Length: 226
Image (tube, rainbow, N blue to C red):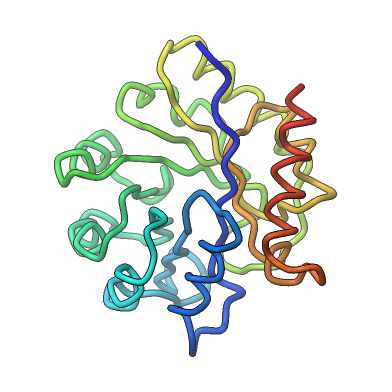
């Protein structure tokens, strides 16, 4: 199996919500691989963010793919709306799904790519029996709910464990990390086996601009992978 492609995916949580369309266009111009929408319901996590109509309004403005990270307690009911809004990849949390197989199958049936996320305290084994159903696994490197948190370096052994599970499965599954990813942390996550990197604050706060941040994080990830 060839090495998976390094992908840089910004979260729009740090964006100016009054001009989300412009922000998406700027991110596309900066060279990102896709854009992540952190969907929070105020129940599964202590925050409230993007409904499908907001995402749908931005969808025609860019060509870059969208993914929805559904941090919600009842994802099955919301899945069709986010697919209709233009999200090609839907991430659900293992902790939020009563019947994870069924939820991932529903995402596939809706025509989107299924993915599953693990909170920091959730062991890697939670996804061991759904590897045949997913296109991506997300290992959270912060506790979900807010942007700008510090990277939890002790998640790197779990990233490594999930990468080993993927390799044993023989399937082409991306491994994503989300939380505190930037120039000082991306190398550790990449060396552990991640190939998709969610970056929020690091992109929006780079004094040299978003294109510089995307290029720098991508280069550091590539170098760490060897």
